Image 1 (tube, rainbow, N blue to C red):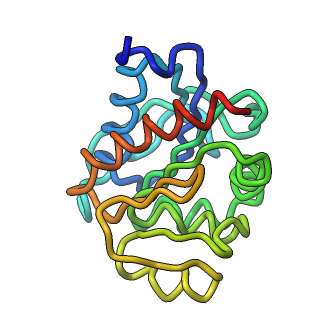
Image 2: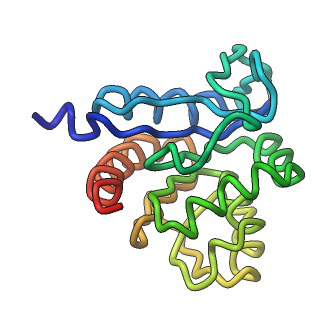
Length: 185
């Protein structure tokens, strides 16, 4: 059954205050609809503050504090955007190490909008074809990525998209890639 293609798979969504809310909620909905167990992982316990672009949105419940999360316990990771969210995560060594562990293990990673900023610090973009919010083009190129302006880009286990308007394509390719790649671990 297609709706359960991720049955038994565990996915971490790494985020903190300032996350673009829809870039967290829509992927979580798509992953859960595909049967995955999804946990919101954040540097702090409790709740994080979602945003709708520049405006505060809802508080989002954290399922697991980063200090208690083991990358080995997950099959894949999602990195939502929002300007504030990945910028703060880049300053958290545990967050960068968490992301780097997925990259080094060849586990599936999906990043949208500003989410790829954490991949730069995790040294996971060299030689990769990817997209992002346009303001990250120079950062990604300088870090060795081949940046393209496309709705969604899949490069092996890495899925990237530019913005909230790309979420339908992003979620579809994320679920497909996670189903193919997470089972290959």
